[in-house]
Length: 358
Length: 256
Image (cartoon, rainbow over all chains, first blue to last red; front, side, top):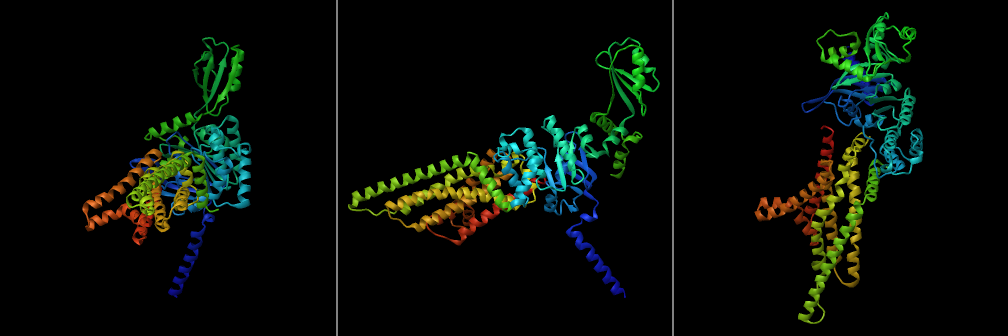
């Protein structure tokens, strides 16, 4: 009896592991799953126990200053280098154990577009396709599609060496999209592009959301806000915050800020502005007549401020709310990092959970 | 088209778009032609001398006087010229940051190395093929034994393959092409001089082992028309070792 039971257990064990080795994507709801990865270069720790995941069809932004560990994380995910510790999985495949499988699932645009200057755009993309094992009519249709998507038709037969920085960046993107991968990893995809191209590339990335999982790194907050559902902020190799862009700036904001510019500003105007209920602080700007007004969180005082300005005939030239910039978010987060012993504020609850985890 | 073939095609295109192949090829063929002319002229002068001394037609051995000398002189030419051909193979990829792209493409490192090696080897074979013009022309005007010429060419091909693999290895070490060229030049010259070191030890076990490491004796035997398995094993294993070391170096860049 015991023998039979053992046998049954053994059988179910085997049938359970066999498909796991072949394809385990159905077991993982996340297309990208990174658990506690650390990368050390000698004594220098580039990234320290980073954990995050990306769901299918999600666009995730990696925000951080230069040297924060964005590129290192991306290089680990693309199997360019192995992590010192921790596991990274892409589409169910382990980055250390099954690098070839992982590489097949990924389209990667490194920091510098990886183009061969001596090849034409079409030759280069053909080469990329062949490396990926795409041949024949499939290759030519993939080529046409990615050239069309990135509007490279006009430079199709020109040498890449003669193209501008913006075009090279687009050729690099075309390379990443060529095999229509389910995961796209883009290291600062809009660097070197002109404003019109930046908007086009953002639109392109937005259009990929839903069908593709995208990780892009940037240090421009509006870019993250424009295209991403979720933002991971990384600083000195650690994740300091992870949330939607709106939530992130909302949580980090202690007060509403309104900037106004007045034509004439008598001596008492600062006092009168302070007297408005809900105003916390008034800072005069660098040019005469401009003020930054801090108000209580959740109160919109624009209407009231405008009324006061009109009543006193100050000549209201400009009135606008000031949203948080990446610099503000950063300064707050890094300041928080530095004062670890102080009571944690609600704003970086994510960040503090991260820290207690690790 | 397999990934290896794609890499070969891309590398060949890279060689012919840049001036490297034209410059290296021109210099190589110029030197080969010049050396041939000199040795043939030399043989001619000797023949005239013999004729004056003996009277009548003199029999001179073109194999010894021309081809053996010619192939022997080509050693130093190959030592200088082949590192120029190989220096760009990996160094340029690293400099232009396309190395990361290759390493994140779904291909094996072996495929990259083999593709790059075959491409530069094909170019070398092309250059060697062009030099066949010299024996062909000489055949029209003189009589010589083709067999030692063939083994001489075989020696040049094998020696060249070994040199190219050393160059490929050096190129993988650095992202600076000049450094890559100098490292392979230095390595080739060192292996050359090891033969001298072996001679210093004389006919002892140590001397024979040290001499075996150098390509000099192995190449010389082929020039004399001898095909010895141990020489073939030497070139084959040397090539395999260098390609293996290249693989290790390329692999190790991922860990840095």
